[in-house]
Length: 332
Ligand code: 3PG
Image 1 (cartoon, rainbow, N blue to C red):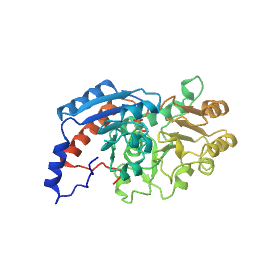
Image 2: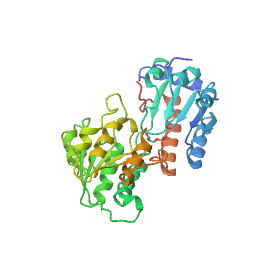
Image 3: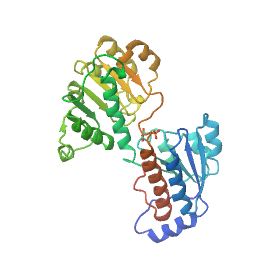
Image 4: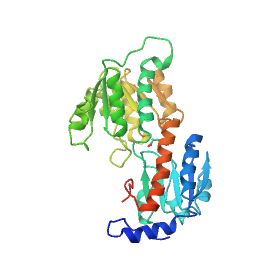
């Protein structure tokens, strides 16, 4: 496999020649256990065909062996939450670039990819609106007794606390404000207060304060070694009476045993999640309508999000091979 040298201005000419020599006949695999909407597949295919790449698809596969077989001779991979492990990378000897059509790339072994000279990119922001809409939908759903008879509550006037103010967090904040919620946010990586001020959102200075004030806590942190298991008993117990934890991020960030303990001690706490926890069955049995999990991750399951993220992935691949554009590379 040719080595991918980082793109620099000085090397421009050399790079253009290099990338051009790779252009025609490139084989791109769209590997999606959870397929894109047809319109997105059509759009992706059109962009890649225009660049004279070959497009192959592996959809709804149920075991790893199918992916290992499909990646054998491809140059490029477009995925969603599909797991690109060291084993997959080892099986894909020609692989040069993996584009995760979406935001979170915890499903890709980025270090191993880097070691092998494989570029990994994501498509940040492209599916954020769908996830943000689902977060609000979940808040309404659980506050209305999961759409079963009985007196519910309203979002208006409640405090919506946003944990991580990135692409999705911002959209949740703006939508929460439109519903009349009091929006606060915490994000230690955003040092410019103007980011929060622009949305009329109050920035709080600690994660403890965020949870202490949250009627609805919307999680938007990525799953990293630092965040995994970081939301558990203490934070849940610190939330106000009747509070709801809303997870459209990743199940791994929750300390499930700790959260279950808190929900057992506090019969007012609720948990709604787009990522079924490991202990989904126990939670459903123990907490009734205080708990809900979608059967399959569906935050980005809209035609619009699939089209935005899928087409962005295809364009990023073409740009990478044509010009060496690595703006969206996450394993530099
Ligand atoms: C993301 O990280 O972009 C979302 O979790 C969407 O994931 P999906 O493409 O598997 O639906």
